[in-house]
Length: 125
Image 1 (cartoon, rainbow, N blue to C red):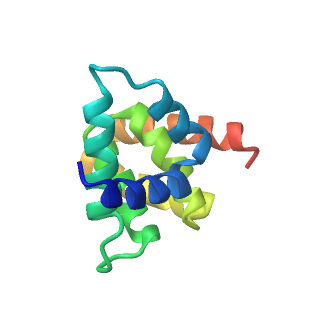
Image 2: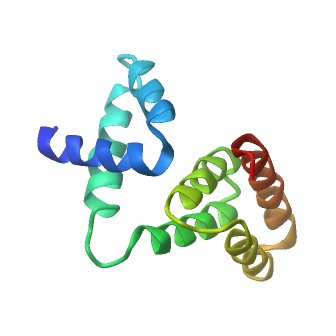
């Protein structure tokens, strides 16, 4: 593991997903899943999220779309929160999810709308 890349990724991960969630994920890691936490933090959150080619808002839009297409509701909820933290409005998230209905299927988009509403409620928005 590259400690510098991990530390930079950890900072970005905390800024996007929230320190409370990220710190709990790191703290609760054990011998089995610790390598996955390190991989995700170093490669996803530093190697990709810290690249200069796209801003965080754009990366959030892409993630919401992909997670809807892959039907990954748990990850989608995390990234709805991240999208809000990265400056997307509730209306913009709605538009992203409406677009996914056309290209990914209505059932997938309905599940994503359901998950997004849960996050908005939890965040008080």
